[in-house]
Image 1 (cartoon, rainbow, N blue to C red):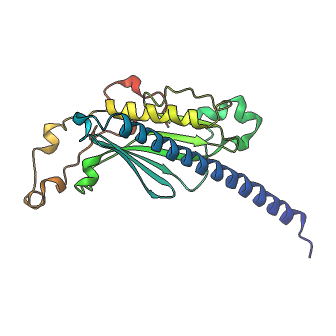
Image 2 (cartoon, rainbow, N blue to C red; image 1 turned 90 degrees about the vertical axis):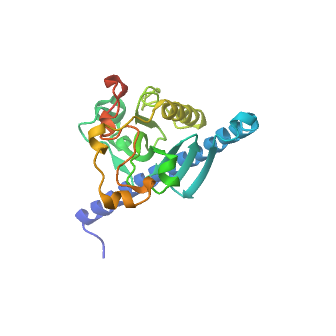
Image 3 (cartoon, rainbow, N blue to C red; image 1 turned 135 degrees about the horizontal axis):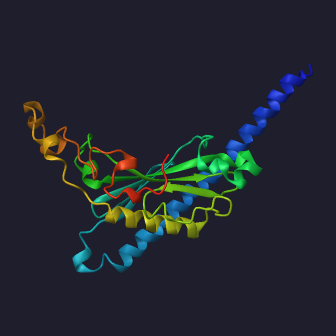
Length: 238
């Protein structure tokens, strides 16, 4: 039985949209593999050239993989987690990207895969401090053309962000990795406000000191968009 014109249009729309999303997924997954390769290169460089120095032996620089979509890089007292989302997203119609000629020429370019970059304290994982907080320091959007766009903090947000021209290649990933590490090194742990930690219950204190419910975070009490005392540190916001 031949499908009706309406049903045939629905089927064609399904095939077109699904094919687009599959292509973007492949590009994003390849991008995550690039991050993996670059992280291994940077780790090897540190181990070969710095860890052999006696005074550097106790300073960690290592990576591991928790699955197909997650890469962990640990250095010093910090961890960077690179998490690829398995789904494809579109920028909202109010986003600045939607007003660019690149997107106006072809709206399908606004569909992207996402690799999120989070910063955690390594002690949060080491001591199972489940109430500690991490920070989204950047996210990388990758589209069907393998072009990328970065929303991020300071060093990450200051990278060249020409969505219409920038392709996610090894050089781009290396720049992004170095910027993420630089930002993390300079993103220091601040003392929480006295008023927020002056009261502790008996049940909290009876747990181990590292597991009490007082959260630890580099900018505790603030969200991603307001986690710095420098108002100019946010180049781009959602």
